Length: 117
Image (cartoon, helix red, strand yellow):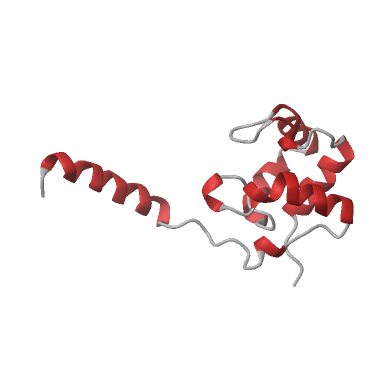
């Protein structure tokens, strides 16, 4: 193997196999989950869903309680502040400029709960 090309391939392999390889699977029906409230479901579909159903975004997946647990442990005030200000790859206000604090809280709680069986 060519030394110039061998190192990037090795690094890529190490990066994909570190810490046990693949991330834990998302809930089976993550793309189908919606809040029961119609207004929240509309907001979720417009502003949250595109990132929170795709593991490659690094956003905690909807219904993935393990991914949400550490965030929920920080407390709702911190999570709400992260939504409002933006945090990591999340844009300010989660791209929902018309949402109020109670809607954000309800959406966080929805995404952090396990999917209904």
